[in-house]
Structures are given as C-alpha cells and as structure tokens.
Length: 199
Length: 199
Image (cartoon, rainbow over the protein chains, first blue to last red):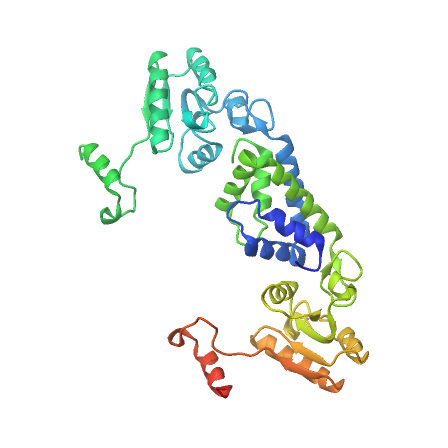
C-alpha cells in the first residue's frame, strides 16, 4: 500500500494490539518513525523479553519471570488471606485500587464446561492443596459478577468450606458516584436485598 | 507495581505509542501475554526492523528502506505531476483516498521560522533542483489548511512559478456529507467565495 514494505509490515503487526485498527496503527507507526525511534526500539526489546521470558508463578499462577512471583516470594504480605481472581489484570486492578495486603490465586478464566474449562484447567486441585496447608484463614472470592463468575464463586466457596476456611465475596451494590436513576435493575435489586444498618 | 518487573517494563514501554495511557498499556500487555505471544514477538521484530532500517527516499524524502522509494523507483507513475505534502501520513492518506497517479515530495513539516524550520529544513532547495529538471508540468500543493500550511503553500507556489511550472492547490469548501449548520464560519465563507457554476 505505502512506499515501504517494512512500514507496511509494522502497521500490520501493530494491529495485534487490542483496540488498534488500521488508522490507529498507521498513526502509531508514523509517530514512532518521525519522533520516537528510541522509544520504538525500547518497546521492541521490552516486547521480546516479556513474550519470551514471562511464565507463571508456581504458587499463585500469576504472570512472573521467576518460579515464584515477587508477591508469593516476598515476606511483606499477610499469608492468612487469599484472594482468588480470574485474571492477572484483575489482580493488578485490586493491587492498584485497594489496600489489600494478602496473597492471591489466579484462575486464568472461570468455570465454563462448554469451552473445556473445568476445575483442572483453573488449577483448583492446586488451590485445594494450598488450602489444606492450613495457613489460610479467609478466602476472598473476587471473580467477576457474571453468570460464569458466580458459578465459579459457588464452587470456590464449597472448596473453602470443605477445607474449614471462611469464604467471603466482594460486596455487590450501587457503585460510588453513580446515580440511582441509571443503575441497572439487577444491581439495584441486589443492593435493596443487601441493605445494611445505617450507624 | 505488579508482580513482574518485565511486565512493568512492557507496560511502560507501550506508553510511547500515541493515544496509549496507563490503562490501555496494561490492557495491551495482558492481552498479548494471555492470548497472542506470537503476535507480540512479530510486533517486536517489525518494530526493530522498521526503527533501524527505514530512512528517507533520496528523491521525495518519504520513508523508505531503500535509497529510492518504490514510488520514485517504479515506472508506473505519471512523472509530470508532483504532489507536495507535509508528512508521510498525508502521502499515505492521499494514496488511499484518491486515484492520484503522479509523484510526491514530502516536506516533513511546514515553514515555521520560530521553530527553526526554514526552506533548508524542508528540503526546498532539493525541490527547486527537481523542478528545474524540466520533467514536471504541474505541482499540486497539498499542505494542511492551517496558517503555517497556507504560508508554506504560498512559498511553494512562488517556487513553482519561478520554474515555469503550474502550481495548483487542493480545493477548500464544505466537506461531503456534512451539514451546513455545523460547518465552521471560515470554511463556509471560503465555500461561498469559491462557488462554482452548476452545469
């Protein structure tokens, strides 16, 4: 299309990024070539390193380039609480937004038998073994509030109770800063049912 | 921030792309790691190749990995018309949108003395030498319709006339598919002044 084969290849390759279409990819390629070749080279290196060297933490299944991730290997976290999330992105969001200081377990998905995602694929035997170690007292289930996420949460709660561990779930309700008028029915009904004493 | 240093570095490096902030960069990094490592590696390679090997065409100053770009080197273009644009992105847009079959000259900017961009920096001596070769009959000035672009267009028109070449400018007016109510005043005034006989 353009006058340079390498440029065409770069534009095509940039489209593997989520949310980047033909026009954005073209804009990115020209911006890097015109103004920031060093940044482009640095990005190439970071991509190569990350794609080749990042694996999974043996203990929590989060992304990590070492056998144990820094959260599991470090000594600064509360080892009595375990937060179970669907993805590393959820873990990162919780780390950034909350003051949670416990450990994590990353399912890498949710129970979805039709897609071939059963307890084995989500590492639940590994989780059960970890619960059996006796160190964990509370398991916070932070799966997404979707049908599959809720089903997974039920399964996890069952697993926790079988191990004598207290399962908890993130609170659902009206989001802060929202307006009641625009909150969806399901959430509002849930918030009504779960109303709490004003003290 | 997260549990992996390489992941943090990748997220930081992705922010060199225009329009990509912290949250988008995180989303891109996780998407590549979870679902498309091959695409990520391909992108790393394409970036490295492009940043290191793409230079400028000796004749039209467009991006090219060879001394002459494929448009200048090829034989399929009309060598009597020359379209002058501000950037390689403008060139790509014209190639994609129009049926133009002539050659190009890329200024890589517009006249802006305060930013140290004079005729030398825009390659205008090179353009003058090319006009003097006598092959070109029409020079289409396709600089942006901004104050600096218009100033550059005037300068280019002067250059063309000095070489006995017919300078033309892209038509300005009401964009197709727009509504008069929402067209800005300057454009509408220009469209009125430049009204044409309906045949």
